[in-house]
Image (tube, rainbow, N blue to C red; front, side, top):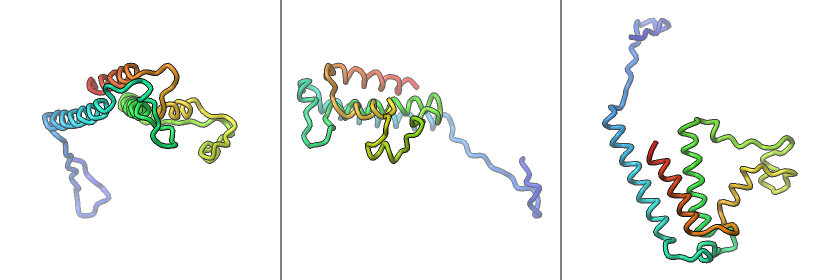
Length: 147
């Protein structure tokens, strides 16, 4: 039992709490089921749409239904990298001499590739199709299910 020698009242036992593996398995199963339900709701929304409809923007913003699915797939992919690689997977480095303020204001002399990719995730790019967007999302989801 660990002892805290600085405690004048004597030993200070430390109690570790652990979650039994069966509880973790059940919780993991519940989380995966909830994620599967959310994925299904999202992908069912676009089934039957044409590639053109998938890229339509109902507002002045760049976001479209295809972009929404691309963005969600990208975010899930990022979290899977975090699971595998740890915090280094969430680094977003800026080029020398570029600040976050420059990037936010649109005045950066150089835009990092990760920022360009992030912006592309919100819209359908030339040549992208419903089948391709859904296939990518399914690949990402499959990696998440297997972890």
